[in-house]
Length: 252
Image (cartoon, rainbow, N blue to C red):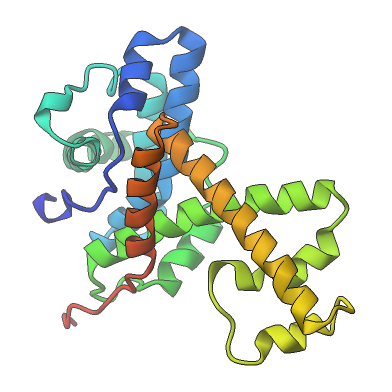
């Protein structure tokens, strides 16, 4: 797992300090933020390390159940290095010892479940971004971390637009928020809501600005900080990660 130790984005230790020093309610909310941010990348790493779909599901569920229910992260020492390295090392140890032992004991069922993990979507996403055929793990992880955060921001913006009664119109603009359309796509799409090309572009610009605001809100939540300089730094890392397509290692 040493090769994977650089894969986690540089999440700050602010959340862990809140975990140690906050109330029971604050600590529980902080743990859930961390788990929601990182459960899919951990699943992708498990699959990339050769676990079957079912085993990767069980290992991810069990690992995060223990993070949510036990004090694994409360005693983390930021002097030991980055949080991402800590989590990856913890998952490596979990695979090597606890999970494999518990899998033998609980074969056929009995593992605790974390209800909000959607593994059908996770497996589909994993296969779309490299699959089990020798893809580069670091590129896979970086891209999927970025995509997970962007998906959460997009879902938040979508919900806000639906609340305003703009569900159908937003569905037309949504494909253009994360990436530029091909030449002529925006002009063709502009006909659908009955707007001129210029009006369509103005609305698209406004929605992209709102999308960026939602991305920054997600980053601030994950960082546990509203510091503009930290948010800009993490935004730059996010964009770099999202631009990295997984590449083949050339292995069979």
